[in-house]
Image (cartoon, rainbow, N blue to C red; front, side, top):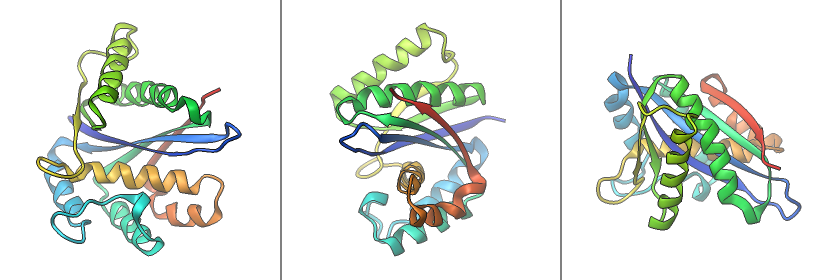
Length: 196
């Protein structure tokens, strides 16, 4: 059965090089995508609002996490890079992206949409993905593109990895954050890599 994934990031920077970079992917069977997209769109308080974990209050975060946890058709793959140097976050992204795309490719995911950034940063991601293919870290069968979480032609499915990545990042070293994350744990597939 075919599946697709939507990817987004979160990070916690610290001056002592103990920051983390979190990359999350919501993986959904192709036959379930429209149902989950409909449910995800209902997360927004108004039709044109953007859902963003970082900007939410604790109560809003709790509601977001509960809603995402109830979308049982989605599995959330998370790669957390530890020991991030805040001056090298693009390196952290590349290393986490390599691990994430390898996992998705191994799982047979056919299509991955990454939250778009600036044109120059998208170009860096595109170059890294081409390198992963040349090095045979990922196969040529997985199609990868960029999507917007807000505005014209936005995809609310990008809100799911935003919420998951934000919740995982907030939970790192925080008992309160771990309590918020708890409803998601049955659907999380976590791996950790060292970024030093």
